[in-house]
Image 1 (cartoon, rainbow, N blue to C red):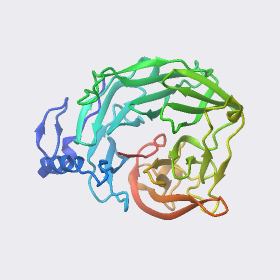
Image 2: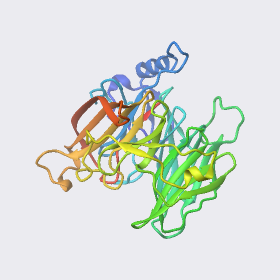
Image 3: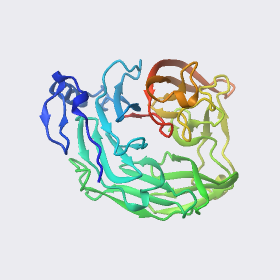
Image 4: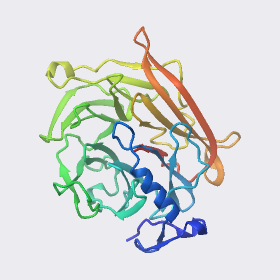
Length: 378
C-alpha cells in the first residue's frame, strides 16, 4: 500500500537529524524541534495555549506542504514545517483538524498520517474504513471527535462516520490504536449531496444542509450524544461547506456562493417550531471577498478559518495575470495565492460589516485543480 512520508532531500542540511518514522527516513530539525516544543508550552495570561495558523498548500510537485504562519502578518517566506509526499501523482488529499493534530487522508488509500503541531511529530493515523474510500469526504470536528460525511456520486446513499477515542484518558493518545472509526446512521439518499454544515454552539449538535441536483433537500441536525437525526425543513444554510460559530456575533459565519461573507442566526433547539423556517441571515455586501468564477480550486473554491474573537482567515487561488486556467498549474508559480485576515461586527443598523481587512498576495505553484488550500487555527 502506498504511504505518505516526509522527503528529507528537500530539507537544508543543517536541519537534518536522523530519526526513523517509517520508510523512507523522516528527518526533523533539532533546532526547529526544540523551538516548537518551547512554543507548545507557551501560554497566555489566561492559561490558554498560544495558537498558531497552519496553512496546507499543494505547491510542491511531489505532494503537499504545511506552513506555520504569523496570523497577524501571514507570508510564505519561511520554509514549511513538513512536506507530505502524495500517495499517487496528481491525487488530491483531505486535511482535517482534531485537537492539536492535522490529519492527512486520501480517498484512494486507507493509510493516514497525523501531524502533531505541538511537538512537530508525525505518526501513523487510523486507517480509513472502506466506506470512506472512493468518495468525496467532508470532515467536521465536534469536541474530541472527528465526523466524516462520504458522498458516492449517486452510486449509493451517503455514509456518516465518527473517529473517536477508545480510552477514557485523553493524555498521550496513540493516533493509530487509541482511536477508531465507527459508522453512524444518516438520513441522506444517494441523490443528496452535502452543501453546508456547522457545529451548534452547544458543542454536540451538527447541522447539515443537502440538496438533490437543483432541488433543495433540506436541513437536518444530528445530536452526537443521543445519535439522533432531526429534520428542520425545506431550507438551506446560506453558506457553502463549513460555517463557524462566532459568540460575539451570536451567529454562524461562512462563505456565500456569490463571493461574500455571510452570517446566519443559529436555530434554537428548544422548540421544534423555531427550526421549521430558514433562520435570518445577513451578508457583508460592501466587500466582495473573492470571485467565484476565477478560482483555481474548482469544486471547493476558497476556504475560511475561524481564529476566535470575530477574527477570520480567508485563502483562495486565482490564475496569475495573462495565464489561462490550464496554464496556471505546475511548478511555474502560475497561481496567485491571496490570504486575507479580517474581523466582523454588526453596525448600529444591524448590518454585517467587515473591518480590519488585510490581504497578502503572492505567486506560488499549484499542482491540482481539485484541491483547495486550507488553514487550521490550533
